[in-house]
Length: 266
Image 1 (spheres, rainbow, N blue to C red):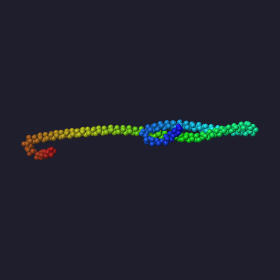
Image 2 (image 1 turned 30 degrees about the horizontal axis):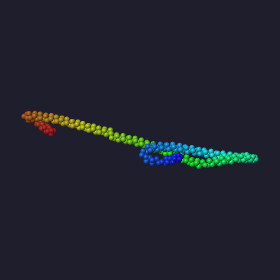
Image 3 (image 1 turned 45 degrees about the vertical axis):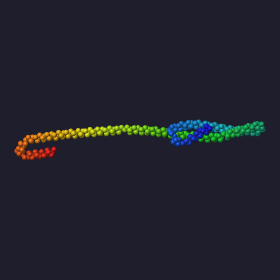
Image 4 (image 1 turned 135 degrees about the vertical axis):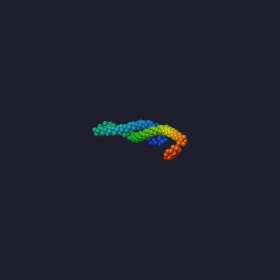
């Protein structure tokens, strides 16, 4: 029963569809780890069972070989006893001849017994040889499945580590996007530009105000001089015609021209 149960378990595990089992698992990595442990344990049990089966087979084969050798040996003894009996009979010694004939018969009886025992165990040996061959093949299949399981587990673990690293990088990138230092710099730069523009506007406004004030001062000075000259002209009205009449007529014309130019400028 032990041999059959181990054999059945080996056959079942060898035929197992690993991919289908993984598809049905809630946690494939944990299931793979458990399957690897189960496979290793089952392989260890199967190796012990196969080793025991092989040991039993070798004992049967040894017993069979001993029975075959015994049958050959008893046959040789029977032949020797029969020849010795023939020798004594030829010498006329019938008593010794009869004695050795009886020994030959006993040897032949032992030979037949040994041959029977050897023949009886041969089917068992053949059956056990088939069982051992199947168990060895099953063990090889289980070892192959174990290698497949370990490879899949290692791949899954590696993929899980890569996925975890990618997830951490993605989370870190999200944090960077939410607190992007360049966006703060851009806002600060915009603030500085607005401040620069404000200062430039104030400077321009201040400069224009000063220019206007200076222009007003210049206009005031010019008007003051004009008023002064006009007052001087009014104060000397009696002399001005004489000066004009007594002088060159071109001076009056020049004054008129200068007055006209002043009016045009204002």
